[in-house]
Amino acid sequence: MAPVAMRTAARSLSDAQPVPFWLEDPGKPGALPALTTTEHCDLLVVGGGYSGLWTALLAKERDPHRDVVLIEGREAGWAASGRNGGFCAASLTHGLGNGLSRWPDELPKLAELGARNLDAIEAAIAAYGIDCDFERTGEIDVATEPHQLTELREMYGEAERLGLADGLELLDRDAVRAEVHSPTFLGGLWDRRGVALLHPAKLAWGLKQACIGLGVRVYENTRGIDLTTSGPSMAVRTPYGRVLARQVALGTNVFPSLVRRARLYTVPVYDYALMTEPLTPDQLASIGWKNRQGLGDSANQFHYFRLSADHRVLWGGYDAIYPFGGRVRAELDQRPETYLKLAEHFFRCFPQLEGVRFSHAWGGAIDTCSRFSAFFGTAHRGRVAYAAGFTGLGVGASRFGADVMLDLLSGERTERTDLEMVRRKPLPFPPEPFAWAGIGMTKWSLARADANGGRRNLWLKAMDRLGLGFDS
View 1 (cartoon, helix red, strand yellow):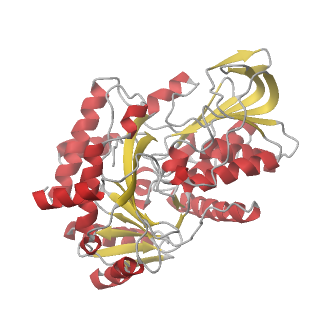
View 2: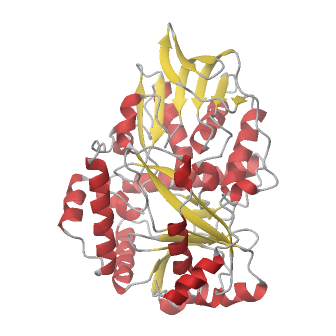
View 3: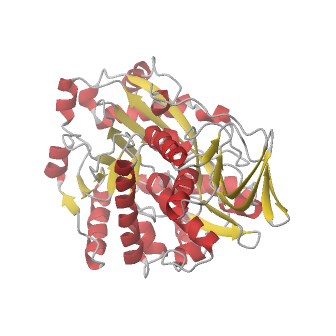
């Protein structure tokens, strides 16, 4: 980083608060009381992020008489569900390319299910009156290097071949800059209907209130400590009590699963983001962005960026930090060296915004699996179901995962449980120090590919053949 660029980036961060912008909203609800007794229920949901909240809500919609309890270790939406970028995607496969490489025969069905899932999220937000700044603006994948432009054209061609190009539009340099002006943009692929933007914390808080309105008993600051059988019931112990339930759905994601064997399939990866102060009308005019799409660049180490309802720019991604040992630790939520890098990249993308300052800088862990998209399973003779491994695209896919968990618990065969994606699990990560070394080698190789026209080295080609992946 050049000295002038570094000074500009550093100055822009001087007032940034080290907390997630979304969670500072004045509409944040107060915490609900912790569980201090023994509860009995038909279904216990563990986890108050999107996975758990959608599971509890859909369980009551399927059967209003079902007695449902939800426990959350802190407050609903405090972790990844409340601090992500707010991109709610239809894709269940972490994009068309990943889906093609893993489930080519099922991809049209997965695309259909994903589109229906996003429509259902939009309908639920309207039906329950959830004020979460939902905007069906779509997303543009932008090319900032010539080889990325070629890759976007090839991806569009694959979508056309599969009959999945409806709503997709290839943009050349002038067209993409007419949408959002950056001297770094060479072209783009606009998915007009497949992505919505929203306020992630407000969605979580709204889902919590919707669950309560349907009769779900929600206990916050109530961590599930262990899971055991207790006669005909499953028992989950908490710090001050316990829950006896006929069935259990686990939506703990990045946090250690109460089903120990499921822990092998995920690692925590730390993602970081910045939020600017609100842009002035002149600043906003200098970048255009009248259609308010979400954006992401097409590098392996990519950035995602978007406008908030009050015209701030969220800028995140690029670095993906895996801590040795795979432990989730609060001290890793802050990483000044990444913030400095992100700020420098921001002004390279939008030099016309020089002088803009960042109001918030934050990070946190997301659950990553080797196939980049969720996996599912059951335990304890089908009385426990789990979904995890959303790898950064859980805002939309978590509702699909909730439906899968409820299908699995019902024991019925459905169009979801028939999917190979649901029936098979990803490859597990190796133990340390092999996980740390392998992820480090993969990150280094991805950075080299970005710098060398997208050419993948022997290591990445070997990982591709094994079905193992790692991304920013």
